Length: 188
Image (cartoon, rainbow, N blue to C red):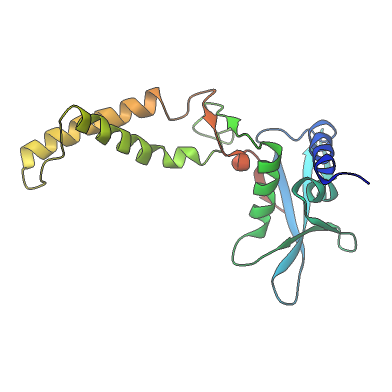
């Protein structure tokens, strides 16, 4: 009998090699069936490879450890209250890139780095800038001290921009810990 981890690894390898699934590939989904209770859905998954559309639902099911519904031809995803097509593609992406991925350095357009780290960068940079200022003895003044507050705010903003440019932001090769956002999701 095949080990569950071997089955997952084989499915991931086939998705990569046979169907060209790599970073920024779009996985198209369609909901085939919703249970009467609304607590589960059968979702089909498709990829486009070499100009052809391929149904990869059975490989996605094996890769993420979900059940494959042979009658309806899709992955059975349990749960409700959220977009289960997103959950399926996110789980597949986390399975294929369990150790995260490297930033491609692109911050606009359709090839933009998909990591959610970029949405959190400003807050992280602000906390780091505040800590750096506090370390050298520059504390945030009271807001009613207009001139002092404006000066402090200007220095803080410059430090945030420096941190975003040098350490965070869209730097090619930057390591993102969460591989769940590598794949794109489209709907049919």
